[in-house]
Image (tube, rainbow, N blue to C red; front, side, top):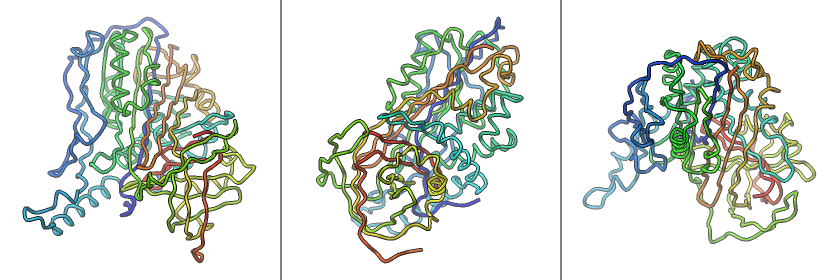
Length: 493
């Protein structure tokens, strides 16, 4: 296992939601409905825990009282999130006489670092498998649409497919395992555990909130063992009610919005359970972090961005500092660090090369997955000129998933969902992935969700470099272990 560096201790993650909806093919058997009860959604925290009020995501209980009789709150297992130490804030270590308690501060910082290193450790093998998955999927999930921004959350689609794997069997499961680079469900669970713990951060310094839930039709009998497994591996809460009702859809919308910082309200509002839906899985991540070195807003200027559809005037941020400048045969790049977290990798294609062309370029993929050991790099005084942007996209993933080898889950004659509904045939019928990323002077805020519906059946001498993102570019938001958490093509900021 490898620990985390001092500079990149916390995992930066962006939000993804997976909703897998299964629709009945045949008649249904009515199961006894579990008693509704409340579940505490608080992290197990040490003596110095993060203040829950500091996070913008509120994990609220959803009860029948809040949403009428359409949904009950069902707890199969109590979900307890990983314990975390609060990030030490300097103002908390000033003594009554105005002096600073360096000894107490250093001790708290050491405990915080140790806690994160232990909890967020991830094996080289897991990282490599995730990189291989990223290389395979990114050309499919970021397929070019002229003049349109398109975004993708690799780590969280991985987690989402992992949940889908838990509720399938046979070739339906094996095809998902093959795409994820896992030999069996046990090895997948181990990888998911490492990635989940490495990504979850809510300590008052960085917000990277992961959550999961299971939404079930009250008239269908479900395999409790699988429901419990989702709670164990994905910390999934469970809900049961009348699918297709306004109350249950409103409860789902609220849950999605609560766990994605309300960044995707329009997209979440389009996620509706139909009366025939028998089950939905939802996973979310919300991320917010500041720059290690913030831009000066007063230095912003209006500059021209050369979009494919025509030139547009945009507000640009500017910064000059000595840092590492990267290049390849068809690109140049800078890697901007986030405070107590990962980084954002900005990749500018050479003139005449489109961002999407880089996605199938082996050198570019090797650079993204091996940035810190990249040989084509040098220290330079970099004058960064980066446009502020607030971009989003919504993509249908069905054709891409089929092309990547996940086929049986979409086939009414081959789909196998027996681990979750042993007496019910089902098949996946749609898959939507929505993402939003906001970048400004202070840092980054982002969220994403995927909805999958189913129906029954060496250093050089310092020099000066100008790096101006004034034409379509590629970006990658990376976590503390260099994992590619979000990536996208900005055609028009």
